[in-house]
Image 1: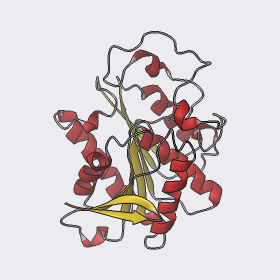
Image 2 (image 1 turned 90 degrees about the vertical axis):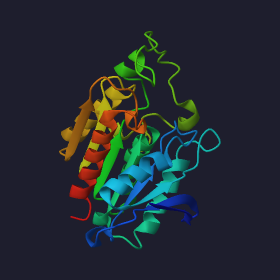
Image 3 (image 1 turned 90 degrees about the horizontal axis):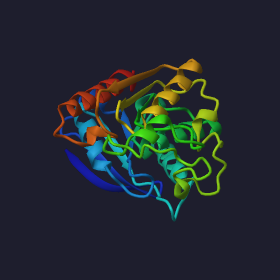
Length: 256
Protein backbone atom coordinates (compact mmCIF):
# COMPACT_ATOMS: atom_id res chain seq x y z
CA UNK A 1 0.00 0.00 0.00
CA UNK A 2 1.37 3.41 -0.98
CA UNK A 3 0.27 6.54 0.89
CA UNK A 4 1.21 9.89 -0.61
CA UNK A 5 0.43 13.22 1.06
CA UNK A 6 -0.93 15.61 -1.51
CA UNK A 7 -2.87 18.84 -2.00
CA UNK A 8 -6.03 18.70 -4.07
CA UNK A 9 -7.83 21.95 -4.90
CA UNK A 10 -5.95 23.57 -2.04
CA UNK A 11 -7.06 20.92 0.46
CA UNK A 12 -4.67 18.47 2.13
CA UNK A 13 -5.32 14.90 1.03
CA UNK A 14 -3.75 11.47 1.33
CA UNK A 15 -3.73 9.44 -1.88
CA UNK A 16 -3.83 5.75 -0.95
CA UNK A 17 -2.92 3.38 -3.76
CA UNK A 18 -3.04 -0.43 -3.52
CA UNK A 19 0.12 -2.30 -4.45
CA UNK A 20 -1.88 -4.05 -7.16
CA UNK A 21 -4.73 -2.36 -9.00
CA UNK A 22 -6.57 -4.37 -11.67
CA UNK A 23 -6.83 -2.69 -15.05
CA UNK A 24 -10.61 -2.43 -14.65
CA UNK A 25 -10.15 -0.38 -11.46
CA UNK A 26 -7.55 2.10 -12.63
CA UNK A 27 -10.09 4.65 -13.81
CA UNK A 28 -11.99 4.80 -10.55
CA UNK A 29 -11.38 6.46 -7.18
CA UNK A 30 -13.08 6.59 -3.80
CA UNK A 31 -13.17 9.71 -1.63
CA UNK A 32 -12.85 9.04 2.11
CA UNK A 33 -14.14 11.52 4.69
CA UNK A 34 -12.80 10.77 8.15
CA UNK A 35 -14.68 10.69 11.44
CA UNK A 36 -13.81 12.59 14.60
CA UNK A 37 -16.82 14.69 15.53
CA UNK A 38 -15.85 17.40 13.04
CA UNK A 39 -13.15 18.60 15.46
CA UNK A 40 -10.45 15.96 14.96
CA UNK A 41 -9.27 13.26 12.57
CA UNK A 42 -10.09 9.89 14.06
CA UNK A 43 -9.32 7.72 11.08
CA UNK A 44 -8.37 8.87 7.61
CA UNK A 45 -5.87 6.03 7.19
CA UNK A 46 -7.81 3.63 9.42
CA UNK A 47 -10.73 3.97 7.02
CA UNK A 48 -8.94 4.56 3.76
CA UNK A 49 -6.29 1.84 3.78
CA UNK A 50 -8.56 -1.20 4.39
CA UNK A 51 -11.09 -0.12 1.77
CA UNK A 52 -8.37 0.67 -0.78
CA UNK A 53 -6.81 -2.74 -0.16
CA UNK A 54 -10.06 -4.74 -0.26
CA UNK A 55 -11.64 -2.87 -3.18
CA UNK A 56 -8.27 -2.68 -4.99
CA UNK A 57 -9.09 0.93 -5.76
CA UNK A 58 -7.33 4.25 -5.17
CA UNK A 59 -8.71 6.20 -2.20
CA UNK A 60 -8.32 9.94 -1.66
CA UNK A 61 -8.70 10.80 2.04
CA UNK A 62 -9.67 14.43 2.60
CA UNK A 63 -8.42 16.47 5.57
CA UNK A 64 -11.28 18.95 5.56
CA UNK A 65 -11.27 22.01 7.83
CA UNK A 66 -12.37 21.37 11.40
CA UNK A 67 -14.64 23.04 13.95
CA UNK A 68 -14.82 25.08 16.09
CA UNK A 69 -12.48 27.32 14.10
CA UNK A 70 -14.23 26.35 10.85
CA UNK A 71 -17.92 25.53 11.41
CA UNK A 72 -20.37 24.40 8.73
CA UNK A 73 -20.16 24.72 5.74
CA UNK A 74 -16.34 24.85 5.64
CA UNK A 75 -15.93 21.05 5.56
CA UNK A 76 -18.59 20.70 2.87
CA UNK A 77 -16.90 23.37 0.76
CA UNK A 78 -13.53 21.60 1.05
CA UNK A 79 -14.90 18.25 -0.08
CA UNK A 80 -16.87 19.80 -2.94
CA UNK A 81 -13.64 21.46 -4.11
CA UNK A 82 -11.79 18.13 -4.06
CA UNK A 83 -14.66 16.40 -5.87
CA UNK A 84 -14.75 19.05 -8.60
CA UNK A 85 -11.00 18.68 -9.07
CA UNK A 86 -11.27 14.88 -9.37
CA UNK A 87 -14.03 15.32 -11.97
CA UNK A 88 -11.36 16.72 -14.26
CA UNK A 89 -9.73 13.27 -14.31
CA UNK A 90 -12.48 10.80 -13.42
CA UNK A 91 -15.98 10.32 -14.77
CA UNK A 92 -18.77 10.57 -12.15
CA UNK A 93 -19.70 6.90 -12.52
CA UNK A 94 -16.11 6.04 -11.52
CA UNK A 95 -16.30 8.03 -8.27
CA UNK A 96 -17.59 7.01 -4.84
CA UNK A 97 -17.71 8.83 -1.50
CA UNK A 98 -17.68 7.22 1.95
CA UNK A 99 -17.06 8.02 5.58
CA UNK A 100 -17.70 7.06 9.18
CA UNK A 101 -19.52 9.12 11.83
CA UNK A 102 -18.76 12.78 11.03
CA UNK A 103 -17.50 11.53 7.68
CA UNK A 104 -20.78 9.70 7.07
CA UNK A 105 -22.73 12.87 7.86
CA UNK A 106 -20.45 14.84 5.56
CA UNK A 107 -20.90 12.28 2.77
CA UNK A 108 -24.64 12.97 2.71
CA UNK A 109 -24.20 16.72 3.13
CA UNK A 110 -21.73 16.96 0.25
CA UNK A 111 -23.98 14.95 -2.06
CA UNK A 112 -26.93 17.24 -1.37
CA UNK A 113 -24.70 20.23 -2.07
CA UNK A 114 -23.54 18.68 -5.35
CA UNK A 115 -27.19 18.28 -6.34
CA UNK A 116 -27.85 21.93 -5.53
CA UNK A 117 -24.89 22.98 -7.67
CA UNK A 118 -26.11 20.88 -10.59
CA UNK A 119 -22.92 18.82 -10.63
CA UNK A 120 -22.93 15.16 -11.70
CA UNK A 121 -23.28 12.89 -8.69
CA UNK A 122 -20.92 10.06 -7.72
CA UNK A 123 -21.79 6.45 -8.44
CA UNK A 124 -22.17 5.37 -4.81
CA UNK A 125 -22.21 6.54 -1.20
CA UNK A 126 -20.96 4.75 1.91
CA UNK A 127 -22.71 6.22 4.97
CA UNK A 128 -21.24 4.31 7.87
CA UNK A 129 -22.94 5.37 11.12
CA UNK A 130 -24.23 8.86 10.41
CA UNK A 131 -27.15 11.21 10.86
CA UNK A 132 -29.14 13.57 8.68
CA UNK A 133 -31.08 15.67 11.20
CA UNK A 134 -29.26 18.00 13.58
CA UNK A 135 -32.46 19.23 15.25
CA UNK A 136 -32.72 16.57 17.93
CA UNK A 137 -30.98 13.41 19.13
CA UNK A 138 -32.34 10.01 18.21
CA UNK A 139 -33.35 7.33 20.71
CA UNK A 140 -29.97 5.59 20.54
CA UNK A 141 -28.22 8.87 21.44
CA UNK A 142 -30.14 8.79 24.74
CA UNK A 143 -29.26 5.18 25.48
CA UNK A 144 -25.66 4.54 24.42
CA UNK A 145 -22.17 5.97 24.73
CA UNK A 146 -19.56 5.86 21.98
CA UNK A 147 -18.40 2.54 23.45
CA UNK A 148 -21.88 1.04 23.70
CA UNK A 149 -23.63 0.43 27.03
CA UNK A 150 -24.22 2.08 29.43
CA UNK A 151 -25.49 5.37 28.09
CA UNK A 152 -26.54 8.56 29.81
CA UNK A 153 -30.03 7.15 30.44
CA UNK A 154 -31.42 10.63 30.85
CA UNK A 155 -33.21 12.87 28.35
CA UNK A 156 -31.11 15.30 26.35
CA UNK A 157 -32.36 18.86 26.74
CA UNK A 158 -33.93 19.75 23.39
CA UNK A 159 -33.11 23.41 24.02
CA UNK A 160 -29.39 22.59 24.08
CA UNK A 161 -28.77 20.25 21.13
CA UNK A 162 -25.39 18.69 20.46
CA UNK A 163 -22.76 19.52 17.84
CA UNK A 164 -22.99 23.29 18.38
CA UNK A 165 -19.35 23.78 17.36
CA UNK A 166 -19.96 22.28 13.92
CA UNK A 167 -23.44 23.69 13.34
CA UNK A 168 -22.53 27.22 14.41
CA UNK A 169 -25.30 29.68 13.56
CA UNK A 170 -26.78 27.62 10.71
CA UNK A 171 -30.48 26.79 10.81
CA UNK A 172 -30.63 23.12 11.84
CA UNK A 173 -33.25 22.48 9.16
CA UNK A 174 -30.88 23.66 6.44
CA UNK A 175 -31.11 20.93 3.76
CA UNK A 176 -27.34 20.63 3.37
CA UNK A 177 -26.61 20.57 7.11
CA UNK A 178 -29.53 18.19 7.73
CA UNK A 179 -30.14 16.24 4.49
CA UNK A 180 -33.34 14.76 5.93
CA UNK A 181 -34.94 18.02 4.79
CA UNK A 182 -33.41 17.98 1.30
CA UNK A 183 -34.91 16.69 -1.93
CA UNK A 184 -33.43 13.20 -1.79
CA UNK A 185 -34.84 11.98 -5.08
CA UNK A 186 -32.11 10.74 -7.38
CA UNK A 187 -29.47 10.24 -4.70
CA UNK A 188 -26.75 7.73 -5.66
CA UNK A 189 -27.00 4.13 -4.48
CA UNK A 190 -26.00 4.01 -0.83
CA UNK A 191 -24.88 1.53 1.79
CA UNK A 192 -25.60 2.42 5.41
CA UNK A 193 -23.92 0.44 8.19
CA UNK A 194 -24.56 0.62 11.94
CA UNK A 195 -25.00 -1.62 14.99
CA UNK A 196 -27.53 -2.20 17.74
CA UNK A 197 -25.37 -0.39 20.33
CA UNK A 198 -24.29 2.43 18.04
CA UNK A 199 -24.96 5.90 19.44
CA UNK A 200 -26.08 6.86 15.90
CA UNK A 201 -28.19 3.75 15.25
CA UNK A 202 -31.43 5.73 15.29
CA UNK A 203 -30.12 8.49 13.06
CA UNK A 204 -28.70 6.04 10.53
CA UNK A 205 -31.93 4.08 10.25
CA UNK A 206 -34.06 7.24 10.01
CA UNK A 207 -32.00 8.46 7.07
CA UNK A 208 -32.23 5.06 5.41
CA UNK A 209 -36.02 5.24 5.55
CA UNK A 210 -35.91 8.73 4.07
CA UNK A 211 -33.80 7.51 1.16
CA UNK A 212 -36.18 4.62 0.54
CA UNK A 213 -39.12 7.01 0.75
CA UNK A 214 -37.51 9.12 -1.99
CA UNK A 215 -37.28 6.04 -4.21
CA UNK A 216 -33.52 5.68 -3.93
CA UNK A 217 -31.44 2.50 -4.04
CA UNK A 218 -30.33 2.21 -0.41
CA UNK A 219 -29.20 -0.75 1.68
CA UNK A 220 -28.98 -0.88 5.48
CA UNK A 221 -26.85 -3.40 7.39
CA UNK A 222 -27.18 -3.52 11.19
CA UNK A 223 -24.65 -5.54 13.21
CA UNK A 224 -25.45 -7.01 16.62
CA UNK A 225 -24.25 -5.68 20.01
CA UNK A 226 -21.34 -3.59 18.75
CA UNK A 227 -20.51 0.07 19.50
CA UNK A 228 -20.20 3.15 17.33
CA UNK A 229 -17.78 2.74 14.40
CA UNK A 230 -16.76 -0.74 15.57
CA UNK A 231 -14.94 -1.34 12.26
CA UNK A 232 -12.16 0.87 13.62
CA UNK A 233 -11.34 -1.99 16.02
CA UNK A 234 -9.45 -4.61 14.05
CA UNK A 235 -9.47 -7.16 16.87
CA UNK A 236 -13.21 -7.72 16.37
CA UNK A 237 -14.14 -10.56 14.01
CA UNK A 238 -17.08 -8.52 12.71
CA UNK A 239 -14.72 -5.80 11.52
CA UNK A 240 -13.43 -7.99 8.70
CA UNK A 241 -17.00 -8.78 7.66
CA UNK A 242 -18.01 -5.11 7.74
CA UNK A 243 -15.02 -3.90 5.73
CA UNK A 244 -15.47 -6.64 3.15
CA UNK A 245 -19.13 -5.79 2.58
CA UNK A 246 -18.24 -2.10 2.27
CA UNK A 247 -15.60 -2.90 -0.34
CA UNK A 248 -17.93 -5.28 -2.18
CA UNK A 249 -20.57 -2.56 -2.39
CA UNK A 250 -18.16 -0.19 -4.12
CA UNK A 251 -16.91 -2.95 -6.41
CA UNK A 252 -20.52 -3.51 -7.55
CA UNK A 253 -21.58 0.13 -7.87
CA UNK A 254 -18.55 2.18 -8.97
CA UNK A 255 -17.36 2.02 -12.59
CA UNK A 256 -20.22 -0.13 -13.72
